[in-house]
Image 1 (spheres, rainbow, N blue to C red):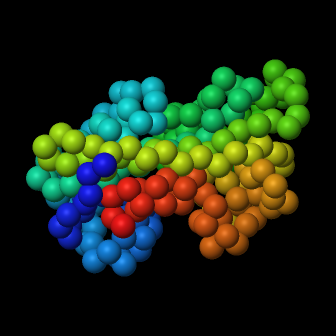
Image 2 (cartoon, rainbow, N blue to C red):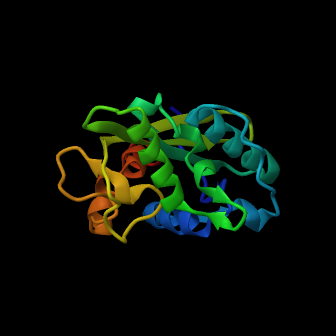
Length: 202
């Protein structure tokens, strides 16, 4: 596994919240993070139907465009009774002409489960795939996952995305109700980041 050397990393995203979150995790290693937008990069088209495929597109696009190592993440929720949907299309399910509407997307998931009369518990998982790519085309892949179930009605004002309907295994609170520090410690992204740090930064 290739170790990260140097002190500059591009986050292959235009999401400033994601940049802040990742920069805080990598700060102890003396690494300065910028995002793709800081370098004038557009967002590449995500044409794959897997998390790792789309994460690779974003990471390699940013690494080639900046000449710096780049880190991307592709994540979403997979619902077993919906054959893994929404999966890589998690954000797309929330798209509207006026921006993303996640309550609408969560309602759509529940309605589909009801139409299928899916048995309970309605098992699901949050997935996060990180790809660290170098300008020479090399990459390292880290996958994080947290298992749970989809519950209804939506619970909690904390978190974002599908958090209010996701109840992790062994917990009594959804990600939408859970203290953010507790959620971050056990989330799919935290799982993937632990593997990334152990593999490339420690």
